[in-house]
Amino acid sequence: MTEKFRPGVILMLRPLDGKSPIIDPTAFISETAYLVGDIEVGPRSSIWPGVVIRADSGKIKIGAGTNIQDNSVIHADADAEIGDNVTIGHGVICHAKVIGDGSLLGNNCTLNDGVVVGKNSLVAAGSVLNENKIYKDNALIRGTPGKALGNVKQRHTELMRRAANSYVNRIKRYKSAGFEQNRKS
Image 1: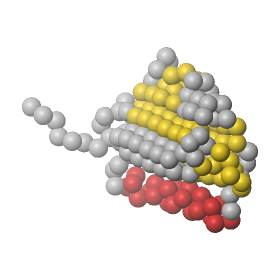
Image 2: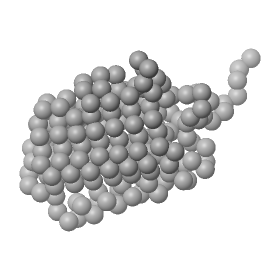
Image 3: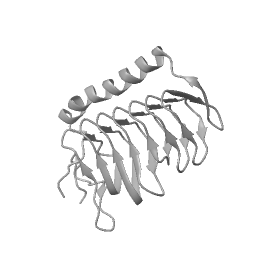
Image 4: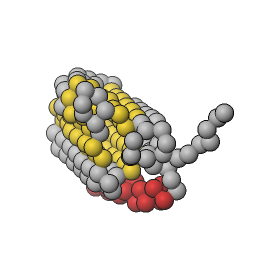
């Protein structure tokens, strides 16, 4: 006998070593995201389909209004912090130590262990940031290896703000449609 599909039945928020993900009630976690270990997700943040966040080597803290888009992977070898109103695009591999408030990581970029990205910075799609690199606030980062090519322009700042806001605005729609994990075990 097969069980009928029931949204939210499979619990993909998993404890490890006595530490469980802590999710603000206003956040959205897709029913196909996988979060394990010492993770904190702040208010109005959203975690989309296929995202894996694995906190087995330190705490991963995600601020308010941040969105982590489809098929991205977040992991770190020590504590890591993703600030407020951050957009992490589709297919990003983020092993960074810090992502500053208001920053945007473009689709399919890779941030290796120990990277620090300052506030309101933009990492271009497909870029690769080498281990332990530190980028100042408002940096426009591009290439392999990633190099700061000056400061973000007003048009970039507006794009990053709109991206973060658009995902906060989607939360209610997706929650009402039943695309969220059931947080009760």
